[in-house]
Image (tube, rainbow, N blue to C red; front, side, top):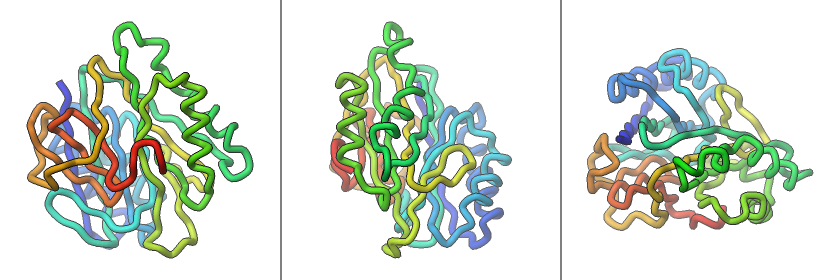
Length: 243
């Protein structure tokens, strides 16, 4: 069974916001947090927020990026932080990071793929998807996608988006654990027993559900939706093959 929870905070303090997000997720998914994708406005001290969040709810994997406008099923705005948590007994997750995109995009792709485990467990989990978040100011995203596709021999579905900073065009870092990293990309590898359908959400944000089997669509941030009708994670408005 796969469950999700989506939470947000508009508290102004970085530490307080991290704690708030963590406490909300613990209440929603008390069993365990296999993976969390977190988006945070650049107005926060993102390192402090991530540290407080991790210390509060102890996710097994944590990644994310700086964002430009945030929304969930219940609210939208700027200057917020929000997070999607996944807990699953039928999926396996890995988090990876690739650095120095601007000077060595092929090397960054190799670093990302080196942490993937899909081939090792493909007999039990034959379907592989990777959610990719990249420093938008580093550029080379098309080449990064091409290199990732080549290195995985076309066996992975890639979806994702670029980090934002409220159109300031100054700094668009990604998050890997509690690290805030520039000029990098992070990926959440999802190995599943059933395929994850990729495509744009069609019926807009609605009230969040906890099970991926429910026929609901839940918005996560300006870059993401969780399409629960087709058991998918799909980017909005960014197409799956183009960051």
